Length: 102
Image (cartoon, rainbow, N blue to C red; front, side, top):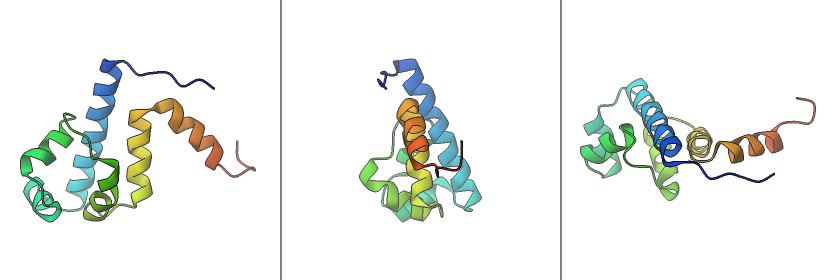
């Protein structure tokens, strides 16, 4: 299967959707942007930029963010991959599915 490159518009849309998900998880964890930022050692503006879709969480920091958001790290990675490369996401989902599921 050939993986296609996303357009800038698609990438921006996925970054925005991922940011909205992070914002939902933050609120569900009972955290303000400032509290999350202080816990992660970043600025509130950086958290705001992630939630607005202007910045991404670096892959090597996903575990730290997942812990702070009280989410399993694999769920955060899954959403990151889905937004960054939907074809890769669905390819991996098929690989991870047990054989008895379609």
